[in-house]
Amino acid sequence: ATLADFGAEVIKIESPGGDGWRKEARDKGASHGVMFDNANRGKKSVVLDLKKEEDKGLLHQLLATADIFITNVTQPALMRLGLDFDAVHPQYPALIYGHLTAWGRSGPGMERPGYDVGAFFAGTGIMDIMRSDEAAPPPRYLSGMGDLTTSQQLVAGLALALWHKERTGKGQLVDACLLRSGLFVQGCTLSMQGFTEARTGRSGYSEEGAKRNPLRADRTNMFNPCLNNYKSKDGAYFMLTGLEVPRHMPKILKALKLDRLLPEIKGFPQNRAMLIKELDQAFAELTMEQISKAFDAADVWYAPVRKYEDMLHDEQANACGAFVTVPNVNTKLLASPVLLSAADSRPKTRAPLLGEHNDEIFGPLRSKL
Image 1: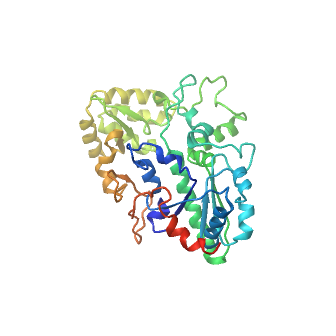
Image 2 (image 1 turned 60 degrees about the horizontal axis):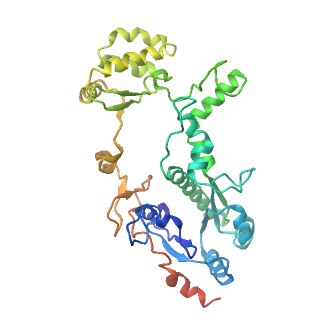
Image 3 (image 1 turned 135 degrees about the horizontal axis):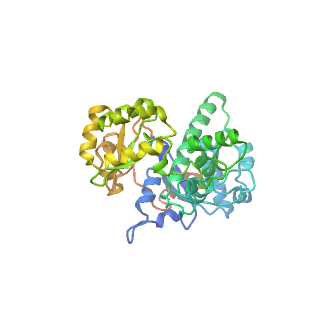
């Protein structure tokens, strides 16, 4: 939808049965639901049965004039259809070929299908490291988070490929995958894991005989007390967001009138559990309003943990352009995460009905077959 939002003509090719996502979260009698609208607004829909030579010929006519071809079909299926990059590129050398897979285009898992819950969350260690301890079950995942993250990475790759094509006239493969994306977003913690392994000379936990990975989210012993979550007297959670302890901890302690602990900053990180315990006790005596007032006056960096059900109405989220309205859709949808000052990225049309644009797209082409 990002490409369509910014003005590209995006033609969605569906099988006769339609994209399965159409059936999710829809009202009775509706052709599709709001999640389909969010991902497919502004696109045109055509139906092709690629097992039929005539329909495959129509696709090739589209490829002959297109700037970009994007697919998330597995490599073996594309090869059976003669639509893998190695088959398509020689025929259309100026075409940019975007391939989004679950597990990548090489390696023992390349042929496996998968959704983001598998390749982005379960397959990258995210589900594991977010557990509070080794025995705890994995946390629930948010639907489509990996898909949306990886799709934006694909958009960035396509933009680079278009830049290259403008200068050389040549197309190329743009390869994005959920597994790489899920690993990439863990750059901070996975690089720390690598540092630990290099320092200790062994993989796994950093301390001999350790029963838990120190990167686990145990907030009572978080490595940085200034990057931790806390709870107010009235039950509100918030995050401290100070990366540098020597810079931020004095402000926090002064805001809480805990000047007696200022000398303890020199003992960080060995005394981090003690500092967290002290902060917990102080916050337990204050309401969120009192904490916010004290923090704002002392220039403490923090962020309240927003209720999920409030986000569509959040003042700052709306002010920064996080949401858009779409014609004929009765709820807010999510805007592109990147806005351009010289481009209107407001959605122009709702998501298409199945095959809604067959006549418009294929009418002129059928006469050439």
